[in-house]
Length: 149
Image (cartoon, rainbow, N blue to C red; front, top):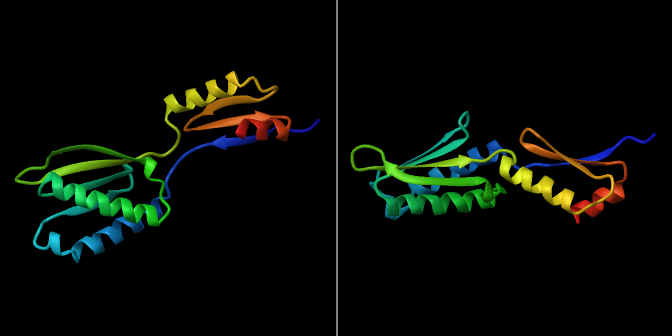
């Protein structure tokens, strides 16, 4: 009897590439003329999976965000996994913004994926949620290929 074939649906970012992108952004912004004399910071919190942007106003935070997105894109980090939070007061005259790094498939989207696979009515294809990923199994590789398409 043949074993079931399977594939996993998951999403995430490479934290080393995120760290490199944050460092490159810091280097570029330190040399920019329009940010000369302005106090700002970009901090990667690996344990919380967050990036903390701090700047004097919302306009400069948007500038920092744009440069960071460009660096992330160049390093191959999927920018769909970056969830930008609201701009909040950081004390004094500065503003702060938190960017969440999404690892894994959110539960709502995982449920939609399982529902979509079940509605496709592919024979002997089973989908189940396992933590932050969705596992799709079938005895036939052809059925799995049909599921992917």
